[in-house]
Length: 345
Image 1 (cartoon, rainbow, N blue to C red):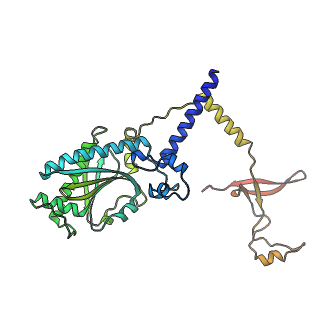
Image 2 (image 1 turned 90 degrees about the horizontal axis):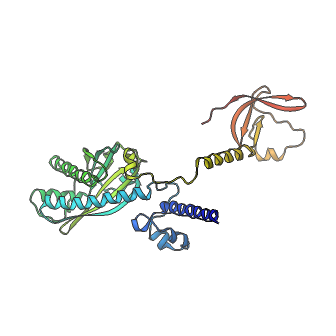
Image 3 (image 1 turned 45 degrees about the horizontal axis):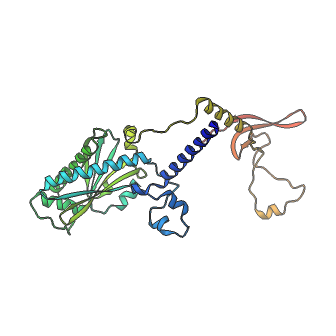
């Protein structure tokens, strides 16, 4: 009876693990990253509210590589950033300024650049120990609001957005450094980051140093001064978190099988592979012919192959060219001797 109960418990654990993995793929509604698994499984094919209107369609060619733990920790960093930024910019501008965290999303670097307006305010920074370049994007209208406020002006919407002058570029570089300093404070609970400003461009396409297909994690914030608001975004390549992945995404999986059970599993898999049938064919030659010529073939016709009788034969395994062989006999049976293995691509 105890054995049956233990087996039931293991079955329940396996089922829970499978459901958890599936929910990781489609996301969690509470975290704002996707759809609830039950809604997806129970949705009708015509239910646009769930399958399209209620969340982004899942692309199996580009799977979500952020685990639930990693996403939760990054969301916590975003919330901390928003709180620290609210205090910091309120003190800087001497007026109530709110910074609201609006969640995470994922995109390739090229797709993200296509979304940015031109001109805008985009900068590369480094955030050691994170690898490579990270990106700071500030709405251009918001950048001019910051400039006017720092110079004693009023907070009015900026209608005439343009590229920065050299003086404005220098001031905005300082603001970008301030944004990264706030990020340093926001991540201090997890690790100590050293921000460094690299470059700033009004044309985001001039920011080179990240491959176009690089997977990015984008943090979005809404900054509001009085009645004026604008977007600030922080973009990080997935690979940037490599050196600190264990901090943001610790391994918590528990191996349910013993070493003996895993050894038995490997043996069963090996036995299954060794006992599986494999198709092997020897190709004496190959020609191309029209359908009409094939239909006109008759008994006794001779096909001229584009190779000599002494040329090596091509040996295919499961349809893949694998060896060159030499024709011969073993007793009364025809045989092929393998003479050269072909390079695998």
